[in-house]
Length: 214
Image (tube, rainbow, N blue to C red; front, side):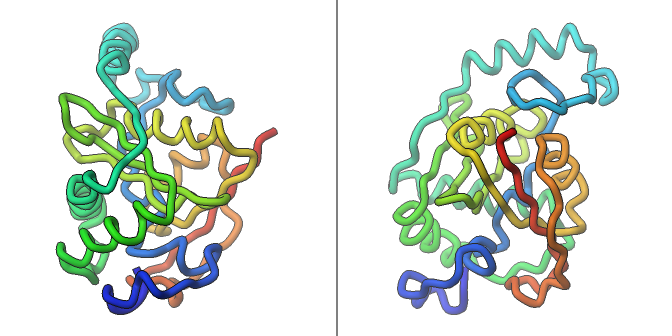
């Protein structure tokens, strides 16, 4: 989000440098990663046992969860639920990150900007939105999963949908968000630019990553 929320709809900035980091977005709360076959991406070398998970039980539970998960295109009526996932995930995953917008501002931003200008997909579990991804052109702008659904493959499923439809992607994440960075690196992304955070709203050091289909 850039500046005053009332002006956000009217502003348009270079998508690769500033707009892609609106509201401190770009997948920074993706802490639900667990190694599984849901990614459909090469280069995944970790195993479930490395994370203290019995591989047999994990595979069975993941299969059951995937049968219940529904991924669909988001609608304007999802704005509040998506905003709630966004805020809860950031608060839980990055307590060190400055909060620069109110709940009302975040809700307006998703309703009037993200859902109208970007492609947005949501993952539903137990009749509620468990996570979402928003993207346009070759940028992933947002990828968040509700804390109670972390480590259930939700983020993996959402990212896979975007990767399957793309040949090149890029995104920003915070340098301090080590687990998100590890997730993307294991998914084939490369870290290509580091900044001191002067260009993002939170003024927190970040890193740009890119992915290209082999």
